[in-house]
Length: 167
Image 1 (tube, rainbow, N blue to C red):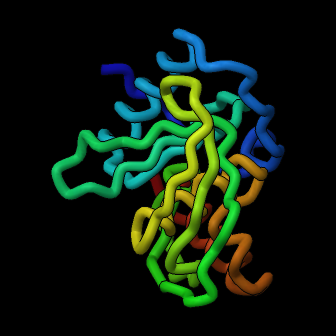
Image 2 (cartoon, rainbow, N blue to C red):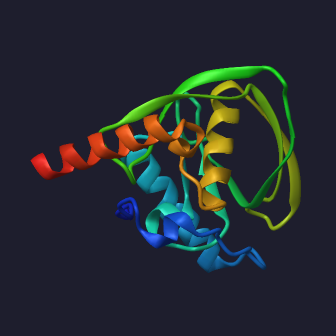
């Protein structure tokens, strides 16, 4: 198991759109493996490569109850999103100790290169959809709190900073 440390907010990699993946190689598969180990150790429902300092459009999502069902995605792109929203409390290891309820589309269709290097389209619903959207945000240089009002975002970041200083 290779657990990687997550970059602290406001690291520049977290604010910069990630570069596309050209091909699925053994190096890419090794990054995915580390991402899954890191996600499972947190524990979390997903992880984007930028969170661990790898500026590539790679994400993993696993919302299964038994785990071990991680979907590996390169260059994920949301093609369709439902009009119906679903609220979920979101957090990030990049800004520990805080969370916020975010309303996102309840279902999405995502196109991505899978672990075999094949373009795939997959429908995600409920928590899977929330996590997929959360990871795509990361890959676009956004954090979940960017969906909040400026005042709520400022308060959330200040609260995390205060907790970090307390140690």
